[in-house]
Structure formats: structure tokens, C-alpha cells
Image (cartoon, rainbow, N blue to C red; front, side, top):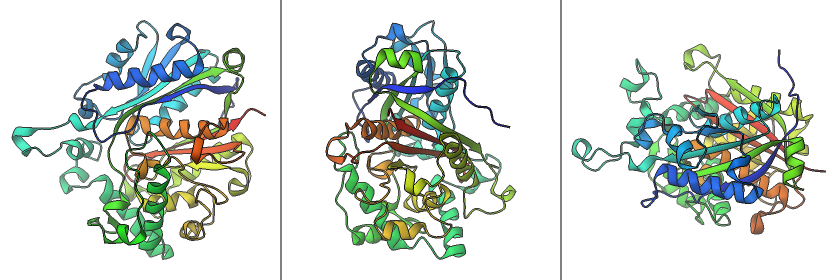
Length: 403
């Protein structure tokens, strides 16, 4: 049985650093400081106005520091305030928002800073691996250590299995459909000043790029990023004191699937995404997402999984996700633009910050502040964060502009 929040929760401040391949001149807590400062400035409040903090930090190995949230908390000046860290793989940013939402909606706190940060590319072992990055090895510890890790399973090969299963079931996504997603998201990133990988690609560029793991080519995969993103959540009473343009979190859903694929009925769909989306829509009163949403930011670590997400988020029936990209439905001028930020493919994937970055993107559109990528008259948006083996975790949020 699911409860209902006792208080409305609004986003009243946002801030994000640029997502980059590597911030050579910044530590992870300096990146966190920059994002927190931007969010506080956007809300026009001080750190003394924050009641509690939630941190999204995915991988201790990335930061080369166990319990990195304590050092972030110290560095951004939040000492003695309550703080907690969340880690749910690629869904970490969304899960941190869910935790912050719960703390405000329950009445426990009036203002909560939710901050995600990742600094993955300092993770090197020069002597052992001859200048090769340890990022992939660090991620392997997320997999099952008994079978998956010794077998060499990676994020790409794991999600490739799901895409292959989807192809075998429905005949889609085709390589061309996946290439169209890459072209769209890299192009969208050219309008995003914080994006890591703005590119004008052609379908042929994607199809001819080197194979990573069947069916993914190089441009079907996102890049790992460094960066930080922060939002400030507030209760309705506090939000109206802070801003005249609150963005309400009207729907929230979450699910943790069976992590071992053999315990699932199939892997051609992600049931955690379906459950999280359905719960978020029910809470927000949305019956037809394709008609009622104005934009969506969804987790596109791989092009094929974006197409699967169209179906798992109920934009279309099962097996028809490829049609949405071919017909332009999810393009910037389409009926439901997806990943106007560039998504993970174009903007980047600073894991703990990613879901928060994508939430900020929706907030900017709902405020009318997204500049040359602005979705006209945007009122309602979806954010989807997924993470873990074959999409174990999903968190979905519905954001709505003040009427």
C-alpha cells in the first residue's frame, strides 16, 4: 500500500556545473561547492536557510574516498546539519531527489539541498594498468561478484542483452533507429552550454563508428563525465516565501526490480521502469503521458534503452518505440521532445549528478529559462532515472509549473 505525501514539495533553486570529461583543476567537493552555490544563488537564500542535505554519489572508487559525502558536507559549509548519502547506480540522482522529497513532504524539514557529484576520471592505477583508466573496473564492483564480475560483464554488455532480447521479441530497435537517437541527443547538446559532447552527427557517422558490444557502436554509448548538480526543495509555505515561480513535484514513483536476470519473467522490458512511471502518473493524475507531458528527460546511457524507455514510460505500446524516433515524435519540435538537454549521450553521465541535471533541465523549460532549446509553453515534464544491472532501480518524477 502506498501513502500520500502530507505536504506539497517544490523546487525553488537549481544549479549545475558543466559536465566534462575531466575537471583537472577541481576536486569532487569543489565541484559540489560550485553546484550548491549556484542553487543557493538561484533561490536567493543562504546556507543557513537549509535544514538538511541529501547527497547522490555513486562510486567510492571514483572519488578515491570512502564516505565522500562527509567531506562534501564539510566543504560546502553544512556542518552539524543532518545529511545522508544515496547510491542506486545510474538512478542515484533520482533516488536522492526521492529522499529529499520524502523529508520535505513528511514535514521533517522545510528546505532540503539535494546535491549529486561525481569525479570519475581521477581513478587511475598507473603502475598496474599502464595509464589505463580504472573507471570500468570500479563499475564492475557494482555487478554480482560471484558470477557477473568474473565473467567480465560491463554496463554496456549487460544492457546490450536487454536490447537484443527486445529485438528478438519485437524486431526493434533497428540499428538505424538507435542511430537516430544518437543524432538527436548529440544535436540537442549543441544548444546546452553545460553539455560535454555537443556534436552534429549523421546516421552514417553513428553506424560506421567502431563496435563496442553488439549491437552498440561507439556513438550508441554515453561517456562518463565529471560534474555536479544541485536543487533546493521546499515545503509549500517556505517555497512561497522564496520564489514566485515554484516548480512542483506532483508525481513520484520508484521500484527496485529483481537484480538477477534469471529471477525476472523477461529482459525485453524493464518492469521497474513501468512500475515507477505508473506510480508517478497516478500520483500526478496523468492518464495519457504522450498527450499530457510537454517534455521528458529519460536515462539514455545507450540509444537502445532510450527507445525501450519510450515503451516502459507508456509513450507508446510495446514494440513501437522505434516508430517514435523515426516519425519525429521525440524530436525538439515533436509532440513529446525527449532529452532536450542532450541526455546522457550528449550532455554526459556524471552518475550521481545525472538525474539531478536532467531534473534541472525540465525545471528550466517549465520556468521558460531554457533559452534557444526552450520547449514552448511547457507546463508538465517527466524525469526518469534508472540504474543497476539491467535497470534494477527506476525513479520517475513529474514536475509541474505553478498555474
